[in-house]
Each structure stands twice: as structure tokens, then as C-alpha cells.
Image 1 (cartoon, rainbow, N blue to C red):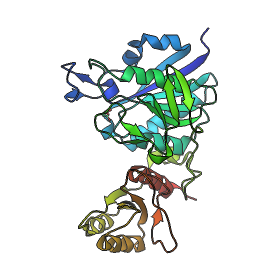
Image 2: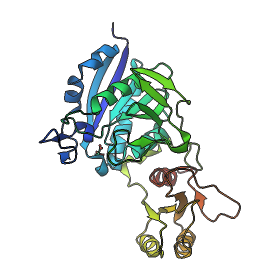
Image 3: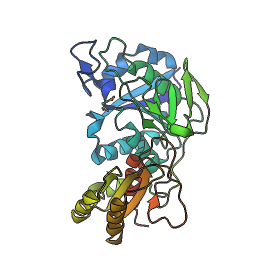
Image 4: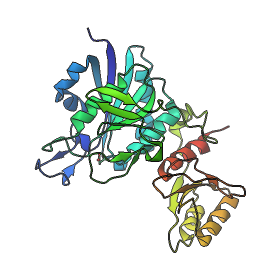
Length: 319
Ligand code: SIN
């Protein structure tokens, strides 16, 4: 008898990609194969003992991810998780913006059941595609008793939504959780956990945002852009964005969030004009360590792309 129901939501990505030549791992088109077809091509899923449902929520290359699809996805995840018989949700997603979607879903849903994003670095038509094993591993995580929160599974590694980051352009094991380390591993269908399941981020102004993104569906989201510190950063981009009505800026600083003096001056001026500024770091590991006298809020450990999502949500928070 089938006991656990797992819902697999498809959004596209390389995992659903096809190439004319099976040996071509670069010249392929993402988001071509439907989720039903991907699931049907994986008979090993039947051996998991789970009852599987699948649904296509989007069919895109994740470089094109946008807030309309995030809304649709969050709504479908919330819908399925509310069904008592559903144990968890798996989402197939492109690798390129997977970390942003994972953070968004964790922030707005803080699910008490597991929501597991998975992906592939090789298209479905490759000689040795990595997607099928990743889906099997994701289903193993989603069906694990006690699992909760949003996680990502790739190449046998389980990452939490707060920490996961794509760090490689080609390798199958393309993700890292930085110095936080992964949540655990999937080994031959079994989980070896190292840390607790993720829970919603405790960030200034970003807590209690459940439903804000849902309620805001009919209004445009606040405009938040990312600027970077670099040699010769002169602040002109910041002045242009402020003049164009940007509501928030995340600055990817150097090292511990340091900024060229000209960029810092432009950001201070923008902040005085009412633009919310958050300082993150362009370093892949570590976080901006705040100290007395800081003139900009720090990203509380979030990477620049996640800090941008957090700031958009914070700007929507009426509280
Ligand atoms: C995408 O992000 O949709 C394409 C790249 C990938 O999935 O690896």
C-alpha cells in the first residue's frame, strides 16, 4: 500500500532540457520536457513507496525567473502542503536562480513540511544525465519523517535555503552551503543529517512576512537593485538608479562589506533621499560583521541576491 504522497512541481531548467546531440553538454535548450514525462521516465521512483503527483507550474530557463512565477509557485506549494495526505513537495528548477527561489519560499512559507528543490547540470538527453538521481534523492528527502523547511538537493548533498549558493558553472556538484556546511547527504536513498532542518530567516524587518507576498500579488513589487564595489567604483550607477526611483539597493561590498569612498558617498546620499540600503559582501564565504557606527544595515549573512529578495519583502511589510 502506498503511504506517503509527494507532489513534484516542474518549473523547467536544464533538468528538463534537451540537446540535438547527446554528447553536447553546452548547446542544449533548457525547459523542454514536461514534468509528467520526466517522472514517467524514472521507474525507480515507483520503488520509493511514495504516491507521486506531478504538476507543471512553469517551463522556463531559470535565468528568466520572475516574481509572477514565484507567486504561482508559492501558491501551489501552499495548496499542496495544506492537504493532510501530502508529506512533502519536490520542485524541479534550473540551477541558475535556484538559491533565490529557495530563499523566497522559505521566507514566505516557512513550511512545516519539506519542500525540496532539485535540478541538473546536464540536460535530460545527455549521455549520463544527473537529473534522475537528483530527483530520486529529492524524493527521499521530501518523504523523510520529521523533515521540514525548504532545502535543495544536488549531487547527493542537502543544502538549507539560507545558505545554498551555486558556486560552479559546470561541475555536477555545483552548489555549496559555504562555511555553514550542508544539512546532510543522501546516500543510497538514506539521509545522513549534519544539521537541523531550516526555519524562516530571523532578519530585521523580514519576519512576519507570511502572506505579504501573496497579498501583494496585484501590486508591483518594490524595485531593489544590486550594485557592486570594485576598483574604480564611482557611484554613478547609484545616482542613476536613485534618480530612476529605485526603492532599495543591496551593495555587494568587498571583503567585510567595504566600499570605495565614492560609492559610499553616493549610497549615503541615496539613503538620505529614502532609498533603503543593505550591505552584503561579494565574498563567497563569511558574512559582513557589523560594528558600532555602521552607516548601512548589513545583510545578516545573506548573499547579495538573497539580500535583494529579503529587502523587497521587507519593503512590502506594512509593519
Ligand atoms: C537554468 O537555470 O534554468 C539553466 C541552467 C541549469 O539548470 O543548470
